[in-house]
Image (cartoon, rainbow, N blue to C red; front, side):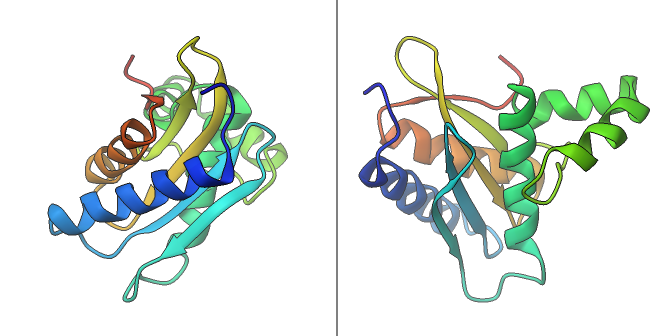
Length: 146
């Protein structure tokens, strides 16, 4: 697959939610963005806390804007906090959240075709749900530790 179709985005979303339920995670909010940063799919499970959807969008938007998974953004934020604070104002789509859970979606050639943002449980668990969805759709995930 070379692009992120609506069907693929829905598969990513569905499988990420299924992973959350299988792992008994807290209710999740999940967004899938295409290569242009537009929302391709979104869901918030019943019981998500206030603003979880916005946090998921910011995780994915930050990853897309800087071309790195949000786990890497966390490291960058620790090393260059003023840079990340400044960038968060120009990213759009609600800024960026520099913690795990924003994962780049890459095709077989390694090109970025989108991003997923997951919020609701621990950041590590959010990232695990994202990766499960990406893999189920036949893509590769880059959370920032690759």
